[in-house]
Length: 157
Image (cartoon, rainbow, N blue to C red; front, side, top):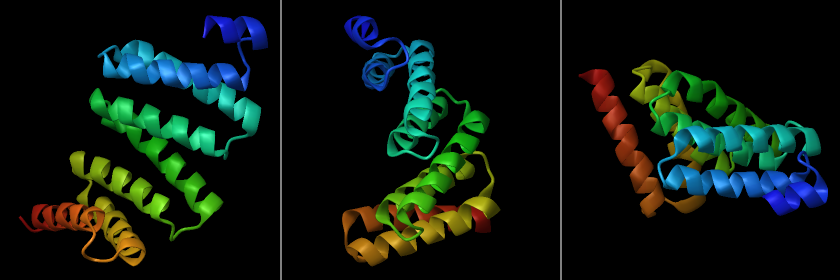
């Protein structure tokens, strides 16, 4: 990181890669505050370097939202997941498997915050997309089906 900051400057996209990687290490070693700072800085650099809808921005948003979710800052994570989902839907289309992953992430978070009525159609949509891509018997499809069934049970009970 220090070498790339000196070589390219502190706001260069190469520095954002270093920040992203270091943030992942910090997150893994249970240093979430430092990781969050790095993810936010990488996000700002990537937005400035590539624009607000670039895949690197989505990657940064996703990791930041995961960190916030892992540190029980669920309300902060929701709009970040929403933004990542909106960018992906626009960039690659609403029926892509990656969109299904984003839908599943957001639906799970909404379920965790007891926003079940909002989570259910997102999870249903994720299940439909992933089933069309992978088939009903694929492990990833079964995993989302199990989560969807649990959500439906939670709504009923």
